[in-house]
Amino acid sequence: MRIAVVAPSCPLKRDAAARVQAIVTARGDCELVIHPQCFLSEGHFAGPDEARLAALLEVMADPEVDAVWFARGGYGSNRIAEAALADLPSAAAEKTYMGYSDAGFLLAGFHKAGLEVAWGPMPQDALRGDHGLGDGVAAVQRALDWLVRRDPAALEPRLEAPAMAFNLTVLSNLLGTPLEPEFAGVDLLIEEVSEQLYRIDRTMFHVTASPNVRQAARIRLGRVSDILANDPEFGGDEAAIVEDWCRRSGIPFGGRADIGHDSANRVVPFGAGIR
Amino acid sequence: MRIAVVAPSCPLKRDAAARVQAIVTARGDCELVIHPQCFLSEGHFAGPDEARLAALLEVMADPEVDAVWFARGGYGSNRIAEAALADLPSAAAEKTYMGYSDAGFLLAGFHKAGLEVAWGPMPQDALRGDHGLGDGVAAVQRALDWLVRRDPAALEPRLEAPAMAFNLTVLSNLLGTPLEPEFAGVDLLIEEVSEQLYRIDRTMFHVTASPNVRQAARIRLGRVSDILANDPEFGGDEAAIVEDWCRRSGIPFGGRADIGHDSANRVVPFGAGIR
Image 1 (spheres, rainbow over the protein chains, first blue to last red):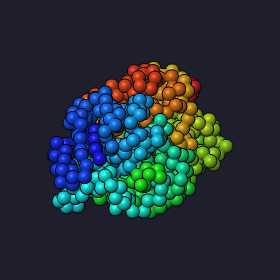
Image 2 (cartoon, chains in turn cyan, green):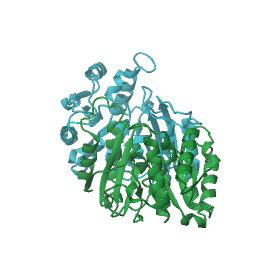
Image 3 (tube, each protein chain N blue to C red):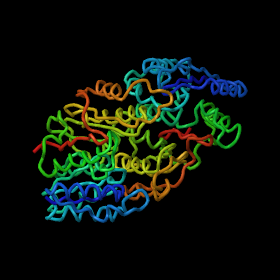
Image 4 (cartoon, helix red, strand yellow):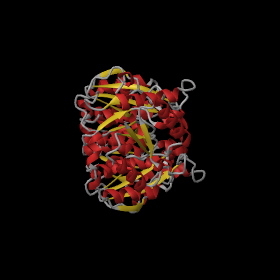
């Protein structure tokens, strides 16, 4: 199992790369190839659009690569997603693609194009210590357990295939774009990080107004972390907001989900791809 | 000329109300009726949805009211816009509606329903002092000059009807909802406040992917104020971002526009309504 790491959004930290390589060496059940593009830096991004796109297409086209693992989120994968889809290498269909957060733009578009994608922890998560020392390592192990041997223990525990998972803001920003997948019958998991509650309310208004999203089987809410101060107090929490917009839009609310911007984040294979 | 003030989003400050009443008294060419709902407060909003909707429908239905002036922005008009449109009083078509920022949800939906709407300063702007003392008064006078006597000096100076103006984030969040108007042939003015540049880039990706927005005659960029720190530096300014997405999407970029979250903000009547 050869896993290639590229960074379609922001640069990977050297520390994270070293930790993940050490984990892979200790496991001995896979090989990790971290593309040098991961360490490029140009303004907000891990190199210019052209460099990020070229690295992504290179590993997608490589028949020796079994999985493409997005290095981290941040912002920027939407800027190259359509170009990657316009020029899909034939070997691209033989791989699994994993990431979350900003990588959701790619997960959406790639899934729509028929590729096998999954929401799950990324190499940069190796640096997390949100629940105690070593938690980032557990997140990376979980991702590898699923990539290498499809360990069901890595999966979000209440998935009903077909499923999808998105950061709420990313989902909102891909609606109406060529990356928007079909949500009919989907167990749609959402999560959020570093937003004010009024923004979450506004984004839920936008997302649940979509006739496509209204075809989802249910919406489930992952963790909403690092909520920024709302001035004044909003007047309800994130679960009340999501339930309210589900009720208004007629989408069943399926309760909470075990995903989020943290080391406990679980794997969600898109579509029927729980295999 | 009787002008009714209601607050579909956040509460109006008492100071602002007093200043605007003093301005109106001194002018002597109009009457201002500030609805008591403007001072309600429930969590983030100027009272619960029901109270904001009831006040809005009340002034829309009042045949003695010539104009409805939204008190201020913030957040929340989207939560009652569809309900207001579902129950449009017959007297609603006899009035002009003015506001900006979060009120853009109402401007969009009301314009789509055939009502006369305009982007322009609001009562809360009386408190602005961004370019010096008394600037907020100038903004309020400008709005009243247009509401009362259609003074062309109040207008954005390079408008080519039909025109529309939106806060970029509000525009992004109304796409795909029942509030979305037709943009074909429109001089589309956008502005932004208190966002990071990476968010502006992401929102431009979303907005310019819309086939409807791609029918606009041109996009013009108003002021982008209080830009929040981007870590690291984004690598381009707001004009470069907007020009880039216009180029990618084939929408003509028409240069800068004289609107923004400040006291210099000009009036933009929607549609062909420059009269």
